[in-house]
Length: 139
Image 1 (cartoon, rainbow, N blue to C red):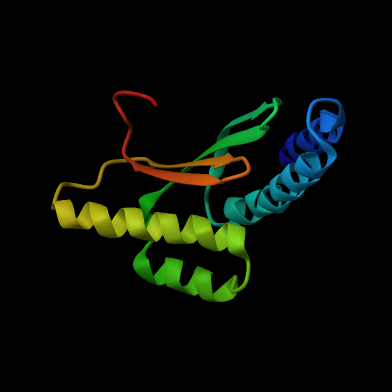
Image 2: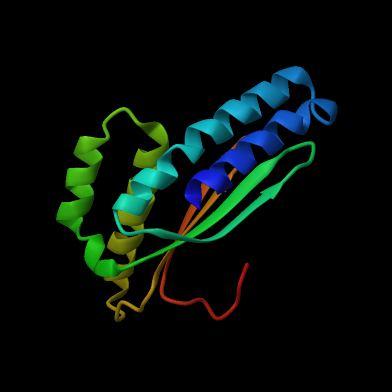
């Protein structure tokens, strides 16, 4: 299923030539292609894609939401994964965001709520959002 999603996203990106300048299209395609490659790896770490959407516009974007378990993301696990993926910018960005979210949440001294939600928005400037617990209001 993940392969079908990734293949569909790649095909959609190929159709951007008519709406975006060639340089911008190539840059966006490369960016999205780089990020698409991390989702199978994230799956091996217990993160499941729950939502996948793509917007084709002058500034195309890919929005992916993944769900995971807090027990899979201990400080030690994150540190080990970061070491295993040195030089891989996209996945290191995700690991850094998750690690930082947990560190900041611990500072609040509030109880950790389920689930772990990872939202990745890929556009010319990627955004990685980590949610610890179920938000009451959606963005």
